[in-house]
Every structure is written in structure tokens, then in C-alpha cells.
Length: 204
Image (tube, rainbow, N blue to C red; front, side, top):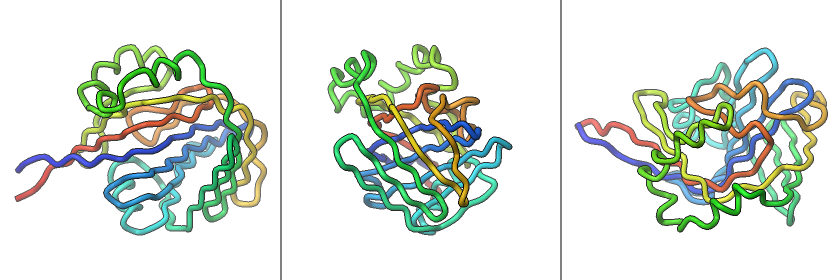
């Protein structure tokens, strides 16, 4: 047996809502599956739903994270300046991105080639734990390992979402932390530019 690493480059947005439903958008510009977007939804009751654009993507994500429900639906993302719009089955999400805080400025100062490396993500795991729920490395599903290397961070200043024909309410912190995997998005809603590396066993 050997190991194989897959790299996903793009953006992750974490949004909390007044209803208790939390949303995590992955908008991947480069990946082993090409460009795609997916959404993870966790309700106030803890039920976790994956919205993925193809069966292949759904199978990969569901093998890495934990869900009670997996749905293959068209997932569309449009970006117009600071405004993001997302549709995925019965989910409609819009959010606005604001300024870059000090942490975002510091992340942008790190050379991208360095920030992509799993060793760098591992080094940052201890300081990242000062943010509730946030981890930069850990064990994923199916015996996989995963690293998150962040390159940038912008605050999300407003959001509006409907899920299964229900308005989810005003933007709130992502609280409690989402439980799809070993870590959560930041408590304060944010859009993070990230390289995610997933290591799997290669069977002979």
C-alpha cells in the first residue's frame, strides 16, 4: 500500500443563521474533479446534508465527511464584486463579503507555494485552535488525513438564505461549530481562500 494526495484549491464560506441552521460552501476552482461547488447544511437538530453537483463528487465528499443525507443537485455559484449567490436544489443563499481583517492580511503575506504545503498547515494547527472549532489538520473519513492551508480571509457582513422553502433568518455566528469533519469554519462568518489536501491510501 502507498499514499495518494489530492489537492483542492478554492474558497470556503461559513455562515450561521438565526434559525440555527449553518451552511458551508466549498467553491473549488481546481480539483481532481475539475471546477465545482458543493454545500454542506447542518440544521439546528444536528442533521447534516450534503448538496453535490455529481455522483462522483458526492461519493468523494461523503467518504471524507459525515452526513445523514446526500443529495445530487445542480450547484451554481455566481460572484459579482462583493456579492455571492448560490443555488443548490432547495437551497438559495446570498451573502456579501466585507473587509479583510488583520488575520486575512497576514495570511496573504505568506507565499502561496508555502501555504499550500501540508507541513505548513500542520505548523499552524496549534495557533488555529485559539479559534473555537477551527483545525488545520486531522483525520477524515475512511482513514484519510486532511490539511487546510489558508491564503486569505474576508468577513461575511450579511447573508440571506432559504432552505426547503423556509427563510433561515439573519446572519449569526457559526455556533455551535459544524460537525461534518474534524474541524469547523471560523465562528465569525468568513470567506476563506484555501488549499485542502486529502491523503488516501493507495491499494495495490
